[in-house]
Image (cartoon, rainbow, N blue to C red; front, side, top):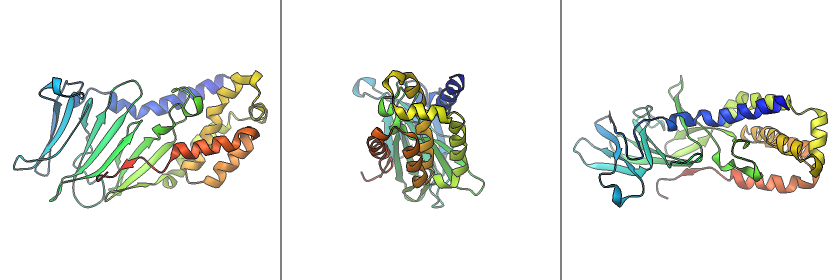
Length: 275
């Protein structure tokens, strides 16, 4: 089981990689710290609320135009103006601000506000997730948003460290968040190949039995099997995902786990500005 422990440690490190940025001491965190950024005539600030007794959240973000008028404001336990601010996030030719809110706590939660800083400033997207987001400008000028689907935290009784958080790749077009996972199939294939090295015929035979006397083996291999199924599913290979589930999961439990996977995945985690 040494290889399995290595797999789980690697998975946990992967799940935590994106969270490093959010844990850094930047912007305002717990009423401490301040940050200011100027973009296209707008001033974006992250700071503590002036009167802490009136608010549950300690930090706020404010965007003001060239005349000093507030065009957007929000609040959270922690607020950071991400470095990507000033880039065109949604491809409309206008610069945007990306504000990250963090609720505090060990494992949760992140909220993102993407605000257009063009002629008509507006909230373009409001995204909530139990994992943080990474914004990267690609060579073609588009901005890639990478994250992990936090809705799977503690999925089907797994511990947080054992949870399989599916990789998610997104791009924002106007105010529509598009899943571009299929463009990154090679990344999902790497996850599948890593898991398959542990899923020998003997291991799968024992796992499929779902024997209560072999609970340790079952619980340890559960996230490995799920990582294969979810990588296929999020890589837009649903036929292969369900085929893998059918071949590897205990027969008596396949219907239940498939329904749970679909219910947990849902239809996306972007919140429209008008909601």
